[in-house]
Length: 327
Ligand SMILES: Cc1cc2nc3c(=O)[nH]c(=O)nc-3n(C[C@H](O)[C@H](O)[C@H](O)COP(=O)(O)OP(=O)(O)OC[C@H]3O[C@@H](n4cnc5c(N)ncnc54)[C@H](O)[C@@H]3O)c2cc1C
Ligand code: SF4
Image (tube, rainbow, N blue to C red):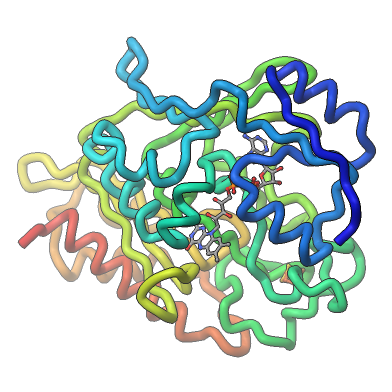
């Protein structure tokens, strides 16, 4: 492990100015991803700026009725928050199906959204990897590609985004609040994570920016949501595939639908194709099967992961059945 300096920021301005004085400084939240990557020498910051003292951990309902999740809210506090559980059960479920209880107690929402891929070649500095070293190649192509992408990949990178929470956040039309040396801005959650046109960039965050919060307006759609995660073992494991689904059914007809897929692409993947099949129709097993077919129509498997296509379809049918035709 390489030496780095450590500073604890007392204010956001303090964090920005301390970072600006470094060549390769990094913000530290729960540290469950960053410290891991420093130990592996994948991340090589010369300075770590601890942001845990900033007042960004609140989870609250705003006067306008939005739910606001502070970037430093712990995954466990967020998962178990009663307002969030009823506003969007899928988000709560996705968090509770993530990592382990100890990790969820430490890890934050901002860090979760910004966590890096679990691609084994990215985490092994002896292997070429375009994400870690642009232009060096992609070791996963032709290598162990079982857990890799089936949607939106290219010949530069076939890695998948690892966060469960981020997939569920696709259902709620969330907004990300950012603050940096140049001021404040908000961006839609959808589109914040990038496809691998430039694999070295996972998201559209700008240098020095902090995520301060995520917000969304609860609705009939978000309240009727669920998250299904399929993985190699029943706990403490990342998704092979996952599906977040929300349906608003009124008078026996689907008025609105949102589908998010995880474990399938470089970014959390919203399936507008599946949504289009559902909206305006009467819920049925056949309809959900048709939506799953449409959602995975563009899938291109890697050498070892054709199974993911069927797995994702089945998970989508299960998720839709659970919200659209509850027993
Ligand atoms: C064994 C293991 C199993 C796991 N399983 C799962 C799983 O099943 N599902 C899942 O979703 N996740 C899983 N995780 C990942 C875990 O959820 C993330 O490591 C965690 O959410 C990261 O949050 P953190 O606060 O620890 O981030 P940190 O490690 O502190 O930071 C991560 C990155 O985000 C940056 N950062 C953090 N906060 C901010 C902010 N507010 N503004 C700007 N930049 C910021 C840091 O600089 C760093 O680059 C697992 C992790 C481990 C180690
Ligand atoms: S899939 Fe992406 S992260 Fe993995 S080795 Fe290839 S370029 Fe690197």
